[in-house]
Amino acid sequence: MTPPPDAAPPGLDRRAVVARLVRDRGALLVVSSLGAATYDLAAAGDHPRNFYLWGGMGGAMAMGLGLALAQPSVPVLVLAGDGEALMGLGSFATIAVQRPANLSVVILDNRLYGETGSQHSHTAWGVDLAAIAAGCGVSETATVDDDAGLDRLAARIVRSGNGPCVTVVRIGGEEMPRCLPVRDGAWLKARLRASLDLGPL
Amino acid sequence: MQSDDSGPGPAWPADIHDVLRGFDVTQVAYVPDGGHAELIRRAHDDAAMRAIPLTTEEEGVALLAGAWLGGARGVLLMQSSGVGNCVNMLSLVRTCRMPFLALVTMRGEWGEFNPWQVPMGAATEGAFALMQIRTMRADTPDAVRPTVAAAAQMAYLAEIPVAVLLSQRLIGAKVFVK
Ligand SMILES: Cc1ncc(C[n+]2csc(CCOP(=O)(O)OP(=O)(O)O)c2C)c(N)n1
Ligand SMILES: [Mg+2]
Image 1 (cartoon, chains in turn brown, red):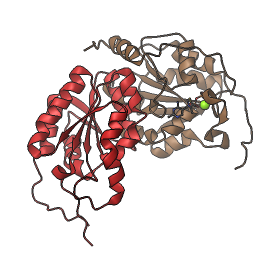
Image 2 (tube, each protein chain N blue to C red):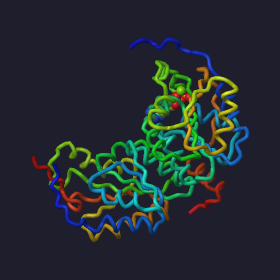
Image 3 (cartoon, rainbow over the protein chains, first blue to last red):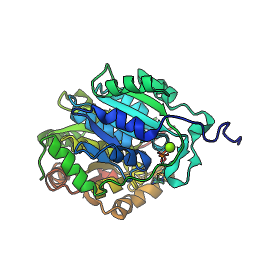
Image 4 (cartoon, each protein chain N blue to C red):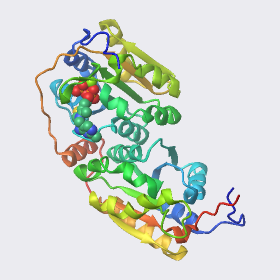
């Protein structure tokens, strides 16, 4: 195995990326994958329509799909790490088949498993998650590495398109201070449901 | 080649479909199994349901959790070999108290000719038990409707995760001939 060509390439500031994406969120529902994506979302400000995963690795995109199908008139964003997306690659295919127009997947690609000690992930060797999504049949895919692209993405995720979109955002590999949101899943569930006027049992 | 007789099929898949309709289940996620073929066909044909083919069973666990977050009821159809694929994702169901309902067609327990189906078939209940997911079993055609209805009631009205095991004796052992 050859080492990755560039161990820690520069990229956008992950905290700034996520803050920008949720700045004008409106009704947006957000599911974040375990680890740094969850900390980034929390750092941008807690919100009843945030669902922070602390586990279930590989399930973030599928969870977003179920939510998007259940609430077809509300935009849904899945914020996933590259490691998370690699564990749930099949969900690109499942999402492509269902074509939910209100679902966006944003992959925060630092080419690392940041949470576990910053080991290189497959994307460090060039595995292209946007191309995989496109190959699965997701018709709208992109890779973003500048502020102009980020602005376009922020506008896209709060409205429905012709189908789902998958965007890889190239972020830097720096570790950020952890920002820990609530980790009581049942409580987060009830809070998000209440924001949709769905009651408890 | 499969030599199952090709007359009109048993009534229990229609019974399950009926029960799911009665509970307003709208997301029917599945990894195909021969025993679920009729129910999968019905789900695809039912405008009130969304049939969702999965690439792996654990995807379905996460999908149904998302559905419930958004107020929709879902069900996961799979064969016993897929249960092991779900184990870690069931943490999501337990931690968030999600109303999980799975319908599992059993292999490896009754007239099984394929030894590869036996280890996971024998471990199916145990795999659910590992994650404290209760199982109920239907062994005869008449037991299917009340068992699925009881399980659905517990899942959706009490937020208790339940898996119904549809026995291989009920489904009929697959017979291969040269
Ligand atoms: C099933 C499972 N395998 C492994 C882990 C350990 N783990 C936690 S976070 C993580 C890496 C996450 O990487 P990524 O999604 O890229 O996030 P980031 O780099 O932004 O931290 C891993 C492997 C886990 N929690 N669950
Ligand atoms: Mg990463």
